[in-house]
Length: 297
Ligand SMILES: [Fe+2]
Image (cartoon, rainbow, N blue to C red; front, side):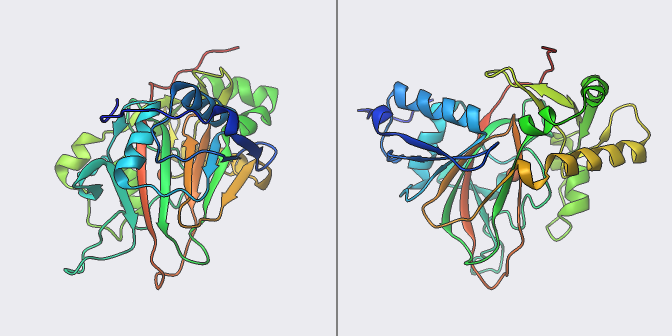
């Protein structure tokens, strides 16, 4: 999808990619994301994303339109399932914020994603990746932590890999909303009907790298299909805790102008707490992905 691009710039030879931790995260310098990019530059960024799970670009000046256009290089964009937080003038961009308008209403999704999850895992074709841009952030707290689900899979025992390969997680948005977002206006019947629970393999094969990743997160995976509800929930929480051990995690401390792009097929993430006396204003886009699958290799 393009939005009236004219000339495209090549930054391929200027890109400086530096790993942030052993398993996850890379910093990319040498590119201005507000410029239309040529194919070679887009491909180099895509490869860095798929290898590292998360890529960080500092000091970017991105309007909502430029954010949308950069994101659209990687696939079709989908707005938030709840239309209420999508920007009116640019509906592919969702606002995440604790700010209120003059009527006292929240202008964006507040306290979103504080429990480990992979974006939109509750739909049949979940998000390929998400791009979050920081306009304003608290001086402390409100970090985003990312876990490598490739590294988590690799660290499983052989018996664990075999056992999990046949299981499916139940991803359930209305349950998530009732459990973790009770401070918000409840979902309407129509909104609930749009997001019935879906099943996805507990181990998913990355469609580009063909590496196996664990695909279970405490925040959106309610339980395991075919198991007793509580037993399944216990296993979900156990796997989620296993995957988010410090050695698999990169914690991003935000600065205004940061754009962080993550691969939802091989990572999960969560936001950390912050003091509401500070303003948090972020913009997010999400790219439509494929239906998750498992291929033994
Ligand atoms: Fe998220």
